[in-house]
Image (cartoon, rainbow, N blue to C red; front, side, top):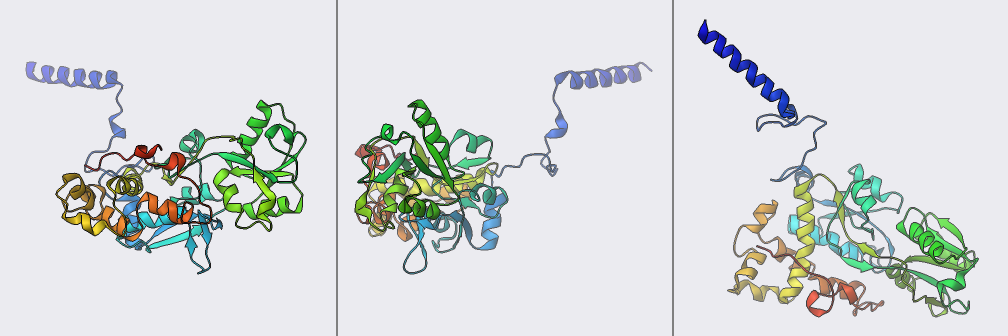
Length: 362
C-alpha cells in the first residue's frame, strides 16, 4: 500500500513538473518520428532540395534573358552573362558539369513566385537583397555577387545634368522592382515633383524612352550601362552622376533548406577564394601539387570539405576549371574583356581596394 501511494505521488509530481515547465514536447519529433506538415524542415545533412536536384540530373536557374552582360541570349542562341555563369558555377559544384543547368527566363513580377512554388531551384536574376525580400518573401540570399546602385539615364541633348533638373519630368521605371520604391523616396526627399510611368518589362521601358514617351528612365547602373548595347544611338544618352540607392545583387534560394543554401553559398565563395589564391581556369592544375594545406583542402586533394556539403570533394576545382574565378567571370561579361568595360570598384577583392572577401575553406 505504502509503495503504491509513493509511486502515485511520484507520478503526480512528474505530471505537475511537465505542466509547469512550459515546454511542448509534442513539437519536437524524435529521431524515429517524421515531422508533421506544420513543422518547418531544414536539411542539415543532405536531402531536401539538393536530393531533388541530384535526382533530376540538372539544376533550374531563374534568370533574365534581356539584360546584356548579366543575362541574355547571345548570337549562338545560348544564355550568356555574369548571372548566367554563376548559375553554371552551382551546376559545376553539384554535378561536375557546368552545363547541367536549365535557365528559366523570368520577369521581375514572376521571379519570386517561381522560386516560392519550386518552378526554379535558384534565382539569379539581378535581384536586390532587401529586408522585406529576406523576411516576408521568404528568400535566403547568398553572397552578393555584384554591388550596384540605382542610376538615371537621359538624352544627352536634354539639358538635364542632375536629378533637380527632372522637376515635372516623366520618368520610366520597371514595375515590381525596388527601383520604383527608390525613385519615389529619393525624389520626395529632394522635393522634386515627377510623373512615374510604369512598364511591365525592360524592353517596353527602353522602347518608351527612345520614342520620347518618357523623359528619363531609371534602373540599376549596371542595367543602364548594358542598355548602350541596344540603344539605336548610344552616343546620344548619358547617365546622371547621382546614385539613388544601394543595390546588392546576388543569388537566392527559398528559405528553410539549410543544406541547399550552403551549397549555393560556398559555390559562389569558391570563385572569390580562387581569385585570392591566384587560381584561374588556365592554371588551376598547377595548384594540385601544392603543399599548402589551405589549397589542398580547397581543391579536394585533402578530403572532407565537399562531403560536408553533400558534394564531391573537388567541387571547387570543378567550378574554377570549368567556369573560372570571380575575376574571370567579371572581366569576361562586364569588365575589361567585355564591351561594357566596367571597373571592379567595390567588386574587387578586399586586397585590391574592394569588399569581396571569402570565409576560410577549412
